[in-house]
Length: 266
Image 1: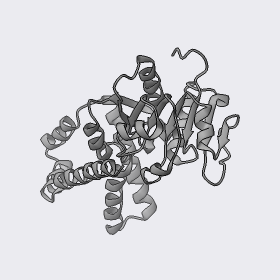
Image 2: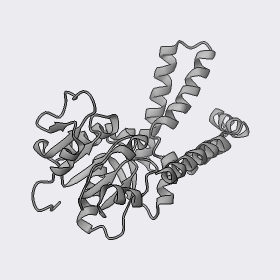
Image 3: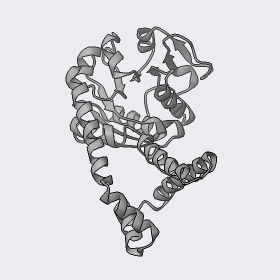
C-alpha cells in the first residue's frame, strides 16, 4: 500500500472495546507501526499498545494523524469538536450521516463504516460508504484497515448502512441471543448450567466455522435439514410456526428505524 511515507493513524476512542480492537488489528497487520499510532482516552490511560502515543486531547491526536478513526458513542459525538482539515476521517458510529461528519469536522474525505465487536477476533463484517470524490488511495487504506478486522464491502447508499446496522452491526449479539434461549431451555430440562453453556457455545462456534469453510447459502443449509425430515427439521418447523422468522424481521426493522432516527437527530 503506497502512502508516500509511514501511515499515521489516530483512533479517537482507542481505549474503548471497538476502537482498541481496530487498533490491535491494524498493528498486527502491519498497516501502521506503533510509533505512528495515536489513541485517545477519557479518564484512565490503558496499559496496552506500548510505543504508541496516548492522549486525552483529541485535537492533538488529529493533528499528528493522516487518518482519523472516530470510535465514540453517537450520543457523545456532537460535543466532539475535532477539526480534521481535509484529512481522511473514518466514522464507525451508527446513524451519523456523511454530510454531518463532513460539516462538523471540516473535511470532505469522509467515510462511514459499521464494523462490529467481532473485530476483536478479526471476524468483523464491515460495510462502508464514502463521500463523493474520495480518491483511490483513500479506498485502499479503508479496505486494508477493515480487511485486517475481518471482511469489508463498499455499499451503494447510506440507507444500506442503516439497514446493516441491525443485520451485522450488532455483531455477536444475535447469535448470543439464540444461544441464551437454547441454554435456558437446556437448563430447564435438567442440564447443569456449565454443561449447557459448553454445549451451546461449542454449537454456535462450530456452526460459524462450518459456514465460513463451506461458504454455502444459509437457505440451502436449512433446506438440506428440512429435506432429511429428522429431529432438526421438526425443530425448524416448530420455531417457524412460533414466529421465528417474523421476530427476526421485526428486530432488524427496529434497528434500521433506530439508525435512521439517530441520523436525523445529528
